[in-house]
Length: 233
Image (cartoon, rainbow, N blue to C red; front, side):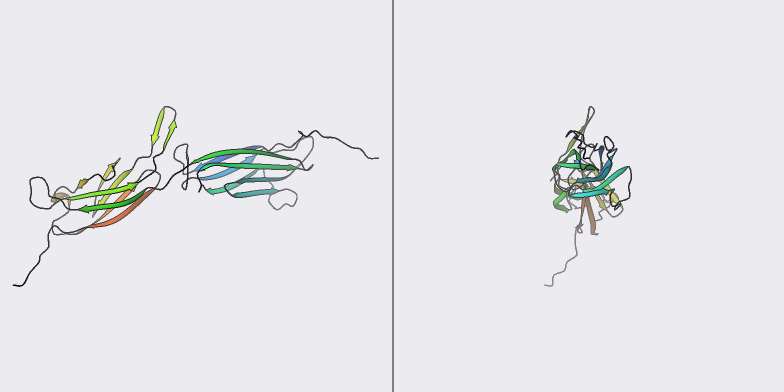
């Protein structure tokens, strides 16, 4: 005797709960080339006596699979996908697909938005000695840099947060920090001999620039204020 049982199309398993955890974020923002993601699905279950056979989790070009039939993956109450670095900007979907013993499949999708970002970069620098006001001797130092950075903001309650550049200049055992340094602005450092930059010495100067998300640095040389030269008659 054959018995045919008709199941409605909406009798499908539960795909459970899909959670997305980000690392190296800027506040609540997923940042291109900086942030990474781990996705976790839990709580899947069959319906009306069916058993879950496979669970698949995909996102950011990667896939994690739990196959209960073959035991290829140790059964657990969750499935974790290390999706890695978010290299592309824009919406990125994460999808969990659950198949039960009747061959019926249920899916759930959760999408995150990745903001476009380019790491901060120093395009050019200028450095050397200048004449201090009221003096004819070149006993000071100056610096100019030109840089690029991507301006980002995020809102948290009533507060708005910005990534703003900060420049640190190092020479010998000295340093000076300038928050919100303006591109191409001239900055004086070691304003007198007591702070460094002897007139007869060369200095290695390192410019370290960060916007709180990425950072970069370059090393330059500031020459002596004068040099001894001799000409024969």
